[in-house]
Structure formats: C-alpha cells, structure tokens
Length: 70
Image (cartoon, rainbow, N blue to C red; front, side):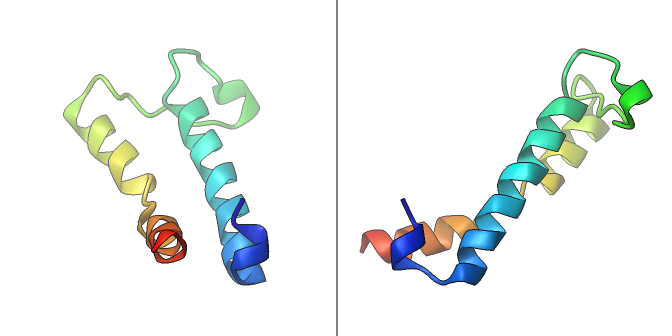
C-alpha cells in the first residue's frame, strides 16, 4: 500500500492511472463496445499496439514505488 508513505497527489495519480488503464484494457478487448462510448484499439495491428503502449505510461508510478522501496 502506497497511501501512508506517499503524498495525496501520488495516491490520486495512482487512482487516475488505474482508471485510465482499465479503459485502455476495455478499448483493446476483442469486444465491440462502441455503443458504450469506447473506441476500439486494434492491438492486432502495429498502429494499434503503438497506441496501446503510448497510452499505458506508468513511469511516474514506477519511480515512486522504486523510491519507496529503496
């Protein structure tokens, strides 16, 4: 658990990252969820994989966890 050892800003960022990651997972799923407002990411194509990687930036959270672990 990161909450007691980090700032509230980092905790809020972690929550936002979790939400963003879940939406990314939904968009990259094999199901057509356009009716629910989720534009698909075609991960079977190079462009789709690049979009998926670009949207899943986790560097800040990883840096904070590494700082706490050291």
